[in-house]
Image 1 (cartoon, rainbow, N blue to C red):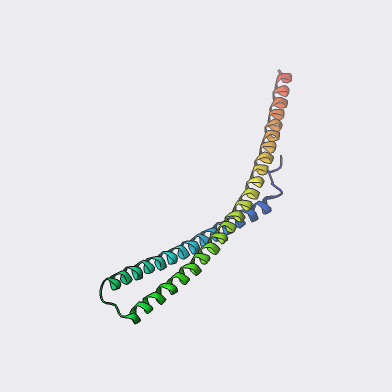
Image 2 (cartoon, rainbow, N blue to C red):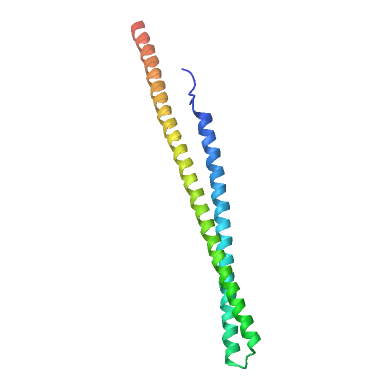
Length: 146
């Protein structure tokens, strides 16, 4: 009997490679998302520090110029936080898209692997039938010789 050959093996190999690439893209997107989240946290921490310094300045004698400067710094921090929040959302959307792509490729690969397993099972069952037929013929020949 001829060897088992899955005709879609090259396509399955391609899907395996695509899944590896998709996993890499997900990892990169996750790293980019975490980087953006960390930047947002740093901005929020800096804003908290500026607010604390502003409160301390209000308790003591404060110069009007310093109050205006502190206020403008807080406005800049709020704008930065808003922009960074948008960057976090973009990174999150990109991560979700990469995860969806990975899921699609993984489903395609699993489908091909199940098909390969079914074909292998059919091939192996036919192989066993062929072997049993050969053994039965040998047994029949030996029986008739006695």
